[in-house]
Image 1: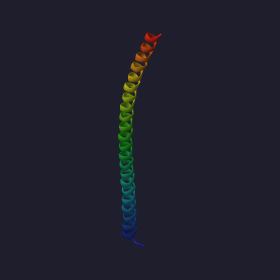
Image 2 (image 1 turned 180 degrees about the vertical axis):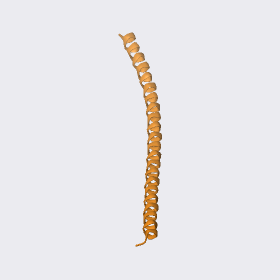
Image 3 (image 1 turned 30 degrees about the vertical axis):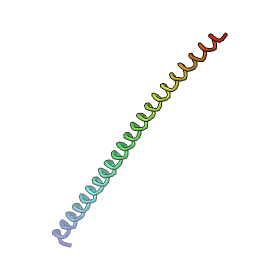
Image 4 (image 1 turned 135 degrees about the vertical axis):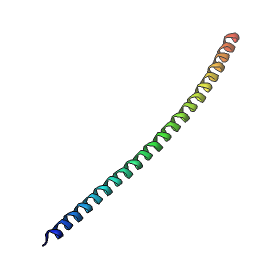
Length: 82
């Protein structure tokens, strides 16, 4: 084999290796971006669920306060009857 052919083969192998390395790097970046998007969606869902839970707690607190007021009125009525 001539030295020119050996040099051409080495250059071709080097170019192929660099292309493969860059391709793997791009694939890793794409995977990381996909995971970041999934985490963002999960965070949005968690925030939404937390907000709904807070709204439901507020409704329960209002209903409980109403029940307490009614119970106090019933207790007062019973005390007046006695």
